[in-house]
Length: 300
Image (cartoon, rainbow, N blue to C red; front, side, top):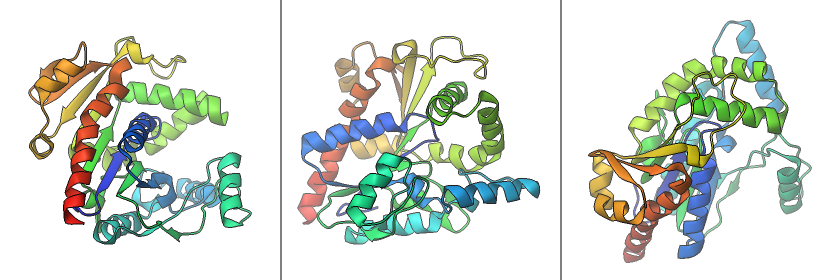
C-alpha cells in the first residue's frame, strides 16, 4: 500500500501464537534499529470488558450470534482508516486496551488517568518519527461489507495452527491465566465458531505468508488434552502466496540451507521443526523488513 509509510500486520485468533511472531518482529526491529508504531488489535474492539459482557448476554437472550471475532464487536472501519492514514502520513490515532493491573498502572502513570483493567485508554496520536506500523491481533486482513483492512497492508502475516491445537492452547491458557473452567471455554469456542468461519478464516487466503503449526502427537480430542504439545512435538508449515514470493524475492534454496532439517512439502511451502519457528521467522522476515526500510529511505 505504501513504500513511504509501510504497514505490517500479523493476524491470528486468540491462542494461535501470534505473540511468537510479535517477538520475532521485536528482535528484528531491535537488531535493525527500526522504530515501529505498535498497534494492538484488542484496542479496536467496540466494547470495554463490562459492556461487552452485557452486549453478549443481550445477544444470547435474542438468540443472536455475537463474539469478539465478528464486526458487531469491532470497529473495522476505524482500523482501516488508521492503516490508510498511516500509509499516507506516517501518523494516526491509536489507543490501548488494558488487559491487566500492570498495564493499567503503566498507562495511568503515563496519562494521569485512573483506568482499570478491561477499559480503553483515550485515543492519542502516534508519535512522529516511526518507520512502519506494526499490528498484531485478530483482524489484520479482515474484509467485509464497508471495510477492506487487507488492502491497506503491505506485509500480511497469518498465524494459524490446526484447529485442534488452537483449541488446546486456548483451553490451557484461559484456564491457567483467567481461571475459566474447561466447560466455559468450550462454550466460548462454540459460540465464536460462526464468526471464526466467516471473519477469521478468510483472512488466511489473503496473507502473504502463513505459519501453520501442526502437532506430531495425538490431539484427536482437544477437549480432554491438558498438555500443549511442545515446539519439538510439532512441525510448522510456512506457506508463501505466489505474489508474495515474487514481490519479496523468496529463495527456497537459501532457506533450506539456512534452516537445518527443513524440507519442501509443496512448490509453495517449506516445513520446519516447531522448535525452529522463531529462527525461521527471523530468517524469512528480516530481509523483507530491510527491503521495506531501504525503499522508504529512497523516497525520503
